[in-house]
Length: 83
Image (cartoon, rainbow, N blue to C red; front, top):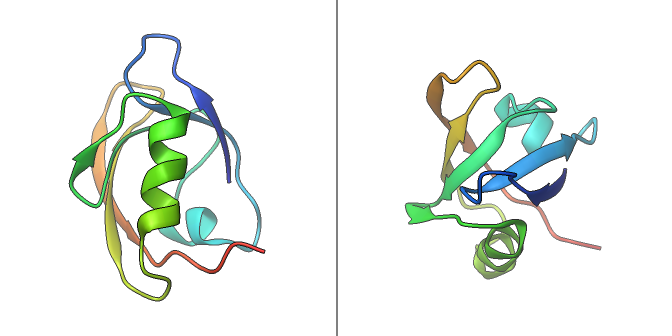
């Protein structure tokens, strides 16, 4: 998954989803904004990168997502090992 700072400063805007990958498996699509990762609020793409790198590979985490249409949803995913 690729993300940049959301224009409103409230999270990480998804600009690309790798297929296959944890983001795709969770149901993320381009245009979604991640606002929380594992219970921690995200203010930027850098916050997301730090949260992902601190997560234990193979452990399920909950994502707080704001979709492009404004709806909010909680999704779950299992981070993999970054290579």
